[in-house]
Structure formats: structure tokens, C-alpha cells
Image (cartoon, rainbow, N blue to C red; front, side, top):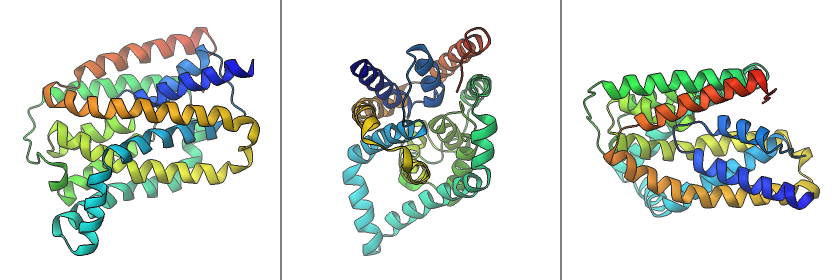
Length: 272
């Protein structure tokens, strides 16, 4: 039975890695598939947090050279590197404020399948609206983002605190609305994910450290590795995809998933 739970953890790790950076809500997928396979982890929230760390580590690995160059440039006085680093911090700052003030409300009130389903569908409609508009792409390179654009992306990320919205979806769409090209918005979303997800994960790990025991570390470790591997492939594929296609396919997928979660919540006792 324990081996079967490990297989479930492996599956959910892959689900997290495949969905974290796509604009389709990893939370919605974890709720739905966790219910379908009847997965129960003694680590509770910690399992989800750690496998998210696996996904973000994949981004750090893929962009490791760029990260190193930016750090070197920042400390050596390179203007472009400092500008980009400050832009990421500007975009990150709103989430820190809203997260600290509203974290308890979000977790106690908004973490429900109905909220996730509605957020998925509403997010899909916003994607359709943004893609139907002919926004001027003033910024084609993520490193050229302006402070104003970064702030707009950061405010959009705050909306993603509503479960089901999708952090990547909100930041990519917010970036496009602010004048970034689809590719630039996607890459900036990856860089913004690093401090955002690392900060949120660290906060949750410290808060829930008491449930990290030897009994559940195997499941958590397996999920972490699976999320890392899956995210490696998704991040590369997503950048290539958005260069050539719109986000409409993700919008349609969100609607289908939202409807499925609504049906499951009403008829199959789906819980968060």
C-alpha cells in the first residue's frame, strides 16, 4: 500500500511540473487529480510546497547561465543587469504585501473547488479578450522591461493568489497587456516565479516544518524529483510555443477543466 502511495506522489509530481508554468492552474489540477487517485499525504500542504520547489528549481537550472550573468553584471555595475534585477523586485513586491496581509483569508476562504473552477473559467475569458486585442508589443526582450511594465505584471500576479487563476497565466497576460511580446512576457514570468515561489515555499515550509517526518519524506522526495523533470520539458516547450501561437488553446482547456471541477464538486464531493 505504501508503494502505491509513492506511485501516486510520483504522478502528482509530474502533474505539478507539467502545469506550474502553463497558464492552466497547477492548483486546479492537483485538487482534481488528487481526488481522482485518492492521494493522502501526512505532509499535507508541505507536499504541495516541496513539489513546487522542484518545478522552480527546473527554471533556475535552465536559466542558470543567464542568472549567473545577471548576478555578475549587477555587482559589477552593469546598467542592464541592475535594471532587470530591480524590475523583478518591483514586480515581486506587490505579492509580498498582499500575501502577508491576506494569506490567512486566502487559505481559509478561497481554497475551494468552486472558487478554483470559477477562476479557471473567468481566466479563460480574459485570455480570449487579451488575445483578441491588438496590443502594441513595445518590449520584445524580457530584460528590456520598464519599471512601469514590471509593476503592472506584479499587480497581475497578485490576482493569481485566487486559487485557479494561475500565476503564470496572470503574469503572462499581464505582461502582454503592459506591452510585452508573448515571449518576453513568458520569460519575465519565469524570472518572477523564482523569488515569488521560493519566498512562498520557504514561508510555508517554516510554518509547517513540524509535519516533515521520515514517514512522509519519501513521497515528498519522489514528488519533488518528478516535478523537476516534468518542468524541465515544459519550460522549454512553452517558450517555443508562445513564439508561434496564441494562448487560446490554454483558454479552451481552462474552460473544460473548470466545468469538470464544477461537476466533480457538485456530484462527487470534491474537496480542496
